[in-house]
Amino acid sequence: MRSRSRWSRGRRGRRYGRSSPRIGRVLIALVVIVVAAALVQLVRGVPQPTFDSDVPQTASVPGAAPSVPWPAGGEAAAEIVGVGEIGTYGPSTPQVIASVAKMMTALLTVRDHPLSLGQQGPTITITQQDYEIYLRDKAEQDSVMAVAPGEQLTEYQALQGLLIPSADNLATVLAVWDAGSVQAFVAQMNAEARALGLTETHYADPSGLLPGTYSNARSQLRLARVVMSNPVLASIVAQPQATLPVAGVVYNVNGEVTHHGIIGVKTGSILTGNFAMACSIQLAGRTYTGLGVVLDQGGVAPLETALHNGVRLAEFEEHLLRAVTVLRAHQVIGTIDVPGSRPIVVRTEQPVTLVGWPGLLVEVDVALDHHLYGTRAGERIGVATVTLGEQRSSVPIVSSAPISEPSLLWRLVHV
Image (cartoon, rainbow, N blue to C red; front, side, top):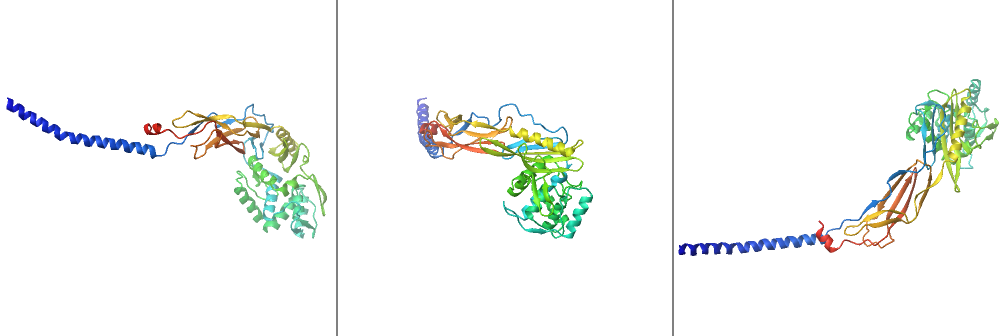
């Protein structure tokens, strides 16, 4: 029994001796892994701070949305240029637009033959055919302006005849002069309509006489905006009258121009009344342009109805705008979450005041700078961008405390 015990003890001793180096190697490997992991933690990049907003990203200007004086029938659309869309009314389906089509005729003319304010442009000589077209249109009781064979009109004067007395015969004169034929010009009108994104819009002639010339209120609102952005066209549609070589004094069919703040743009009437209106709006020393379009206005006197409804929109827009302070100076807009630190308050450096009206959409977007660690208290850490309607303004945002990198201990224990 004792011999067996010695033999057993010997085997156990030898077994333990062989295991000791293996355990040591395992321990060394574990130490290496721990050290390597620590080194990785120390040299790898640390997470950037994140922003937690106290300001809603999307909201509306406070207050009751205004009640727009839309017409009783037909369709309409309105906006204030550079601020935002007021809205639309009605079905937004194609309507015969009559002489409102001449906005496109005028736009293509100055696109192909640019004019600056004060310039008269090239001379157009009235031909015998032009004179016969005038006689024909007059006999059919269309809207015309008197011309005579051999008469010379400058481009500017021809545009006056087109837009002020709304002469259908001048639309034909300009179409042929610009494109070589009415058909070629009408093709350009439709191509430009597509380029401008005028939906439900088609032109069959340059004057708007044909029923195949139609559009909707929103599309003509967009076109009116383009027309009013051209200084020459804007100056013409604002004129109550003009004096031309043969016709003499001609008067604007838009009898409301210079009244109720109205500064343009174009009327149209066959069996229904249409009016694309532009008005001037003053607020805090700045001038804004309001636009409104009413189409398919009926009644005993459809054009007068359209003008009346256009005036109502102009008077409404005149008092619509107000200053809107979206962000105040030094306003707390959120916090910066810094790894290993308490949240740091973020403030605006300057106020953001724009213009609008109750119900208009407001968006606030905050973008942090790429490198924030090392920023001192009061230094810029990014920008807050406010979008109000079509307006956009950005202001710096600042940190209320220094932004330091996470400590060594934090970096060691956070994977």
